Length: 123
Image (cartoon, rainbow, N blue to C red; front, side):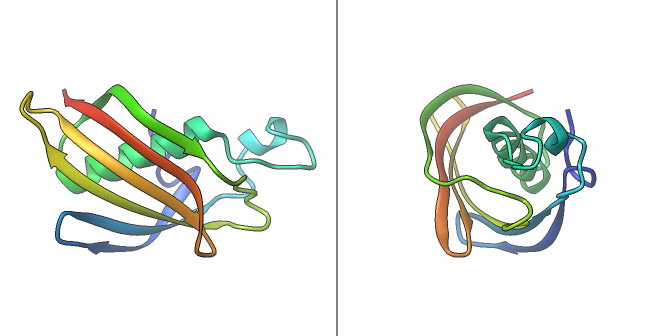
């Protein structure tokens, strides 16, 4: 499933020493918000995690599959009507199994909305 250019668009991307920082704009008119939830839109957590995967794939030039999630903490609701601009800070490390370990912080207006750590397998 690709969400890029339908559910969100990349506004700005910056390469860092061991990762990337990306600002995305959530499409507040997307169909998903009609059901999640009517008149009170909330960006589904699974969509936020999919964006992490897609941004990682784009940066690394590899298809990835989530193998293990070590740490997933949802700390704030991302309401696209109030916070359509969302920042993704991702760091990458290759481990001894040739998997890619990704740590991510997702934030809105400088406040953490999600902290994520997981291992991805190259496919």
